[in-house]
Image (cartoon, rainbow, N blue to C red):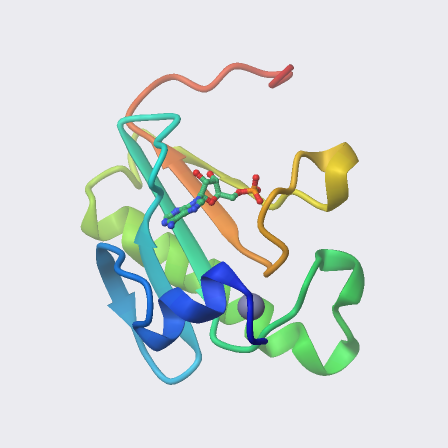
Length: 114
Ligand code: AMP
Ligand code: ZN
């Protein structure tokens, strides 16, 4: 996707603090952190929203979640815990239209989030 911010980060065309990358997944620091730890996990494959996922993407989404959990362990926040979030479309607060998981930790999360 030519004008997608997260595709550009995945290709190294826009700088980001990369924490992990492999052939399918990239993880990096959120530029506007909402918690002490706020990381973004994306697939290299451009998928605009969670609504656009197909059955064949199930393995990829599983890898995203596993990458988030591994990152949480590396950051030593697996205990006490953290939050994973995927926002979908304007009503869900999505601003970048390339699916991503937010990994948030290092502070107590409230529920409901508001
Ligand atoms: P969302 O609102 O769920 O689409 O989340 C998009 C996230 O991307 C926000 O938390 C932004 O702070 C973050 N973000 C936007 N631009 C960048 C960037 N250049 N590098 C890293 N994170 C970014
Ligand atoms: Zn993209």
